[in-house]
Length: 252
Length: 315
Image (tube, rainbow over all chains, first blue to last red; front, side, top):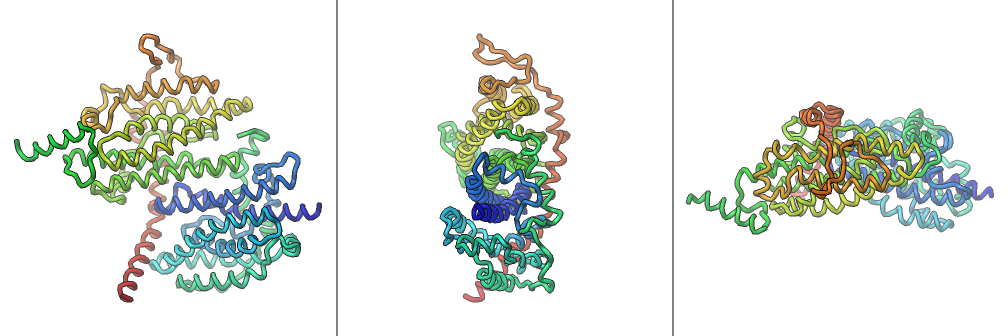
């Protein structure tokens, strides 16, 4: 039983990352800098929501009773969402959108590559399907990072500002929680320490290619993975949960 | 006959024979301008049309509905892209067209100036608004200008899927709880008349129509298309158990069509002229996206130039 509890919690962590970032991207639909980028960002958002459905359908199946993907997605309170703090950061401008995406995609790729070998065959299958999407996301975000960093002076400054503000949340991606440790030990979850090295090497190389600098402050207290969020998450949930809260127990 | 008249006659003969006109073919200037106007306005409608539905993406009631809605709004952006490209073949750039939208010179479909106030509006828009659009667009798949006709074939396939999706949202609501049914009825009440207005002014007041018929941009009149929409929609509403908000609606045995009440033409013209419930918000949203995106587009251009320079140096 305890094993299932941990597994469910781990699935929520994976799904919440995809859901909260997918939500942020979905806020941009119809408001992109041009149609091509609008379509691409919506595509990425859709990929994330596809992943969310896979993780939460599996979690619902493990929970049994009358659980389903929507109950899991929409009917938890703020402290029961376990996404990393980076992902709930706002779409201040396109540079924030790209830097947030890039910092996560590079991590996500390493994570999924490990999860493809998970002892849990469902997680391995989800990771195998998602990795193709993730590689495209990383290509998209790193190409844009280079465009912004090497584009105009204005775009360079904006990209640097976004990097300064968002880089400080990256360390949380590797701060192993108890659940992550247990999942790693049972061969289901990823080894975050092993990912960290590759991740830092990749992002530092791409940041350099974009002619940007690694910020001086590199860490800010961030515990979203433990359910201790920034004030921004509450507003995301207010929108996300609106229908399910206002009209409980209905079919849509 | 002057060479110009000869060309015009040959051009019209091709259209009459049902041949497609391609971008590099000779065409009367008026034909080119009419198409630029119509195709760009159609493109603008797709892009502005993303906003009312985009309004519910973050609040969709289930993950499945959220994904379907995201995909639908994304399809509209795709339609905007094909249509801008089709118009570009006539010698206007996408930036110029966008400029015309923002300055108010180019219009877009008035329906998108109505607000989306509940989840049921996603159903009503799919069912009625996409339904009305399809009636127009099916006709356009046979229009004389090749790129426009071909774009329409592809767009119609996606639109009919959207319409079924919208109707299915309505079916679920109409067979749901009393609250859901009320939400569905309210959406129908609010979207019925604006959807009827989508076919434009009455035939006797419609300008452009004669030429449009001659060039096969239009094959049926506004009133004929509107009648077709009413005849399609009445049984669909009956099946849902919802009531179309028109006390004059009744079957006319003699005509073989439904009779229906008068459209509020004052409201129609008010919205066309820019004073609908959301005209201001829609334009502001487009203008903001464009203005805020300028530095991004500039950066992409600057980067591409630097790349091509460094490539040519390497060569």
